[in-house]
Length: 336
Length: 237
Image (tube, rainbow over all chains, first blue to last red; front, side, top):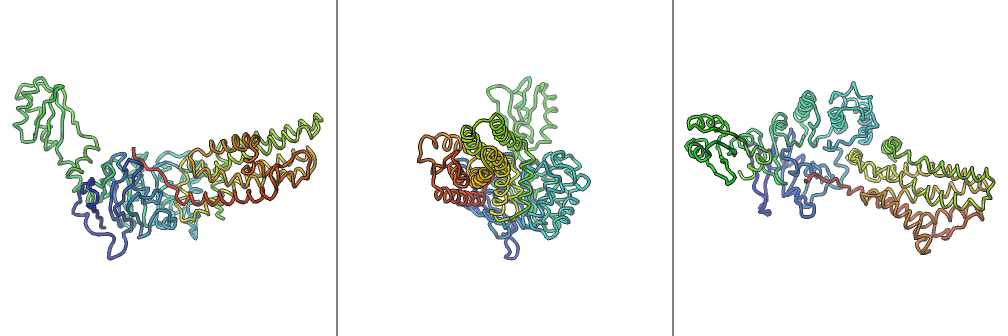
């Protein structure tokens, strides 16, 4: 599997994404166009830039599209799925443009984030309709196979309106898989699934990826991506912030400096004592009281703090990690 | 013609509660006609208000609006349109079946009560003329309202403005607007086919035929073109 990114110098605002060792190579293999290729893709709505100069090429295997809410993942997926024209740049699937090109859906399957299903149909009717709309030679067999794949056979004759969120999601996946597409795009596919269904969906995506299909799924949950995919594309504020092997990116994320807000019985004395410790890289004394500590290593700082406080005879009233939001983790990647 | 798209469209249309809105208006037309006949009111006194002012000017466009915006607009609203659009179908294969369903359902819903009311008012010929005229009107209205679902996010509101303000109000005050009024073409068709003295068409038959065809074709082509460029808004917030 090859994954590559590049950020053309034409957009100075776009920081170069972090690219791990796994994320090298060019589009496609041996001159063949990549399964999904984005070249300098931007999308804006008026003054709002939703996607900013993103380039990537994806081939067979499972890739996670990771990023906080509002990072532009759905916009990117919509452009890949032909439901949104890029304001600039080109989006192709197997070398074909996706916008205004319905023929591309022969090789593309899509599970959108919006939970829109015809509730008045049964799962079988719904998937069968998809098979017919694809013009498959044996739509009934294709529908049964796809439903079997997502383990929905026992409930296939019930109306979709009566399903749980996870069952509806699996039905939509079955409909997207009914024509055996080479590229499958899934927007937040694990939303609303219970742990067992998640596990099953993860296994399914793995096996589809191993079978040579290009699977791209979006998520804002780090752990989801970690379990399914070895390769990630990280979006932050519309830009591609990191790309490549998940483990190297994860390491980068955990090794970043952490910021804590501490309140104690003697802030100034605690600040002096903390500065002597190796794990602390800086201390601020903000006006409103308390101290802000920057620590290089999360674990050793949180272990050292009680010990230091005890030695100095200082009572710690409050310790709050102040940058633990996913956004800050992703933002760090942009600065890295 | 894609039968699966037709099947999904019809299931969607009849599966929504909005469909029940179709029932009271046609029932009202028949009920009023039966009542007038039963009370012995002269057809000259009730044919115009019941057949034209209610039947062709209100029931036909309102039913066409509910159905026309229902076959595509509702799917756009709830996002289910994505399932049909993410298939390798030329967009005309999506628009035409939906148009056929809209036309068929509107015609059935409007032509039957108007036929009954026409027979009660004068003759079978009047009934058939009203039914045929409402079918022609259903064709133009359906194309108009299906296209409207794709050019605006408020097709029902815009459709009502056209029917109530343009056709209903301006059509009676400014005679020039009648040339662009489907309602006037339908009245002309009914008048010409029935050869009745109960009401008169205000627009020539030639204009009515040409304009009905132009509206039907033009708005169908517009709908196909707009569906080709149909975009789904991304989350940017």
